[in-house]
Image (tube, rainbow, N blue to C red):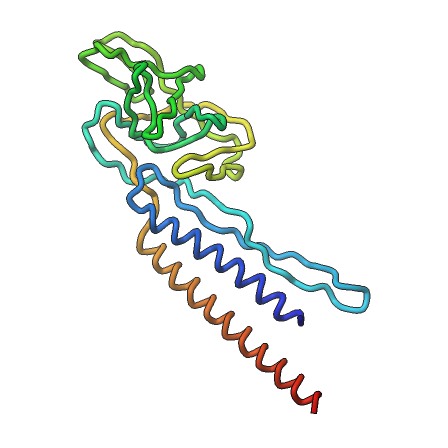
Length: 238
């Protein structure tokens, strides 16, 4: 196989992965707390042998999570929380601690605040957040302090990775990082609100069309190369 075909195939593979990322963004336009993703393209050189020049190849294996603020929607839910500004909720899962911006919480049978999947929300000390079942009034202040009937019970913790570039999607609206976490200095929580997805539908659809056209152009190039090689083989075999 000739070098232009190798190069085109790596580009086509990257465009296919980008289309999958864009499609996932579009599918989560209405998902609470969803963070838009993008694909990072890079170029690397590969030495073929001593007689030929190095071959330039494309790679698209890294993803970038965009942390721009999503729109805030008032729900009036007592345990619905939206983060304004930086930070993530810290969630305990069987696979380890995870980060999320989705604040649609409820309580389990033990009175602990949990995600829709049943994973526990953690406070500033790393302990589950407990809500008394007999409390008549639950308030959560802007700094995350949870009070029941006027009595403070604890503070919901907001954290963020020291290196945002190490943030990656674990599943759905959950994220993880290999680096250390740090508490948010001035957390801002809004009770009775939820943060919407930060995906811009217009820009995502425009990007989808652009990627599709680029893929079609690459496919036409491969078809022409295939036809050219066939013609050469037929000519030489006569």
